Length: 125
Image 1 (tube, rainbow, N blue to C red):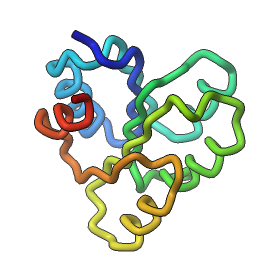
Image 2: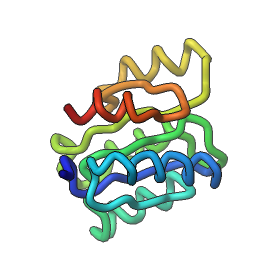
Image 3: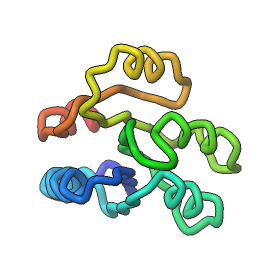
Image 4: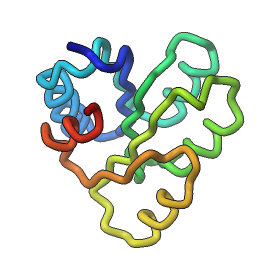
């Protein structure tokens, strides 16, 4: 049974998106999964009203606009931020990234890649 209607994956890496999408699909926690290969693409979809995610899995390091730049732009757009949970999903072991994510009011949790079934169960319980 789905717990969340729409999940947005923001990652520039095709393989990471593919693997994460499969794990989420197999979990049955989400009705709809939307992929964005860039943070700016995701911002545009939310700005123009074509996307209302409940959950966002956000990569930290991406070209042009990284995860933290996404959060700056996310802060500026008119969406119901109160009902969107954002999980920073990254392979970064940089303590600065962890500290920045912990200090960000929009980040629910910092998760190291790869996303696992167990992590999803913990998120959606």
